[in-house]
Image (cartoon, rainbow, N blue to C red; front, top):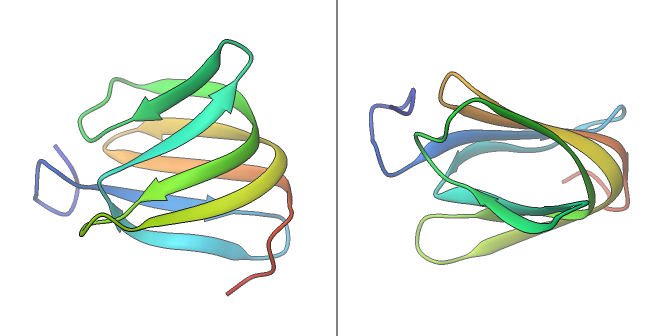
Length: 93
């Protein structure tokens, strides 16, 4: 279950060495690894992967926040999705 108490959302944090690029509630996250595009949704099993190109945060209401990045690591654990971007191509904000 998501820490925010709603089963259909999950807390997502996207951080780079310089800044927090996103920290909030989302419906899920889409990214790319060596096997292709994948989606992580609320109540996902524990998961870790190298990622590349981008992280797309799916926001409530149908909006999407696209965060371009060269490479990073995604970790889904304890109802939280975290992306540790090695280098973000997006200015903080």
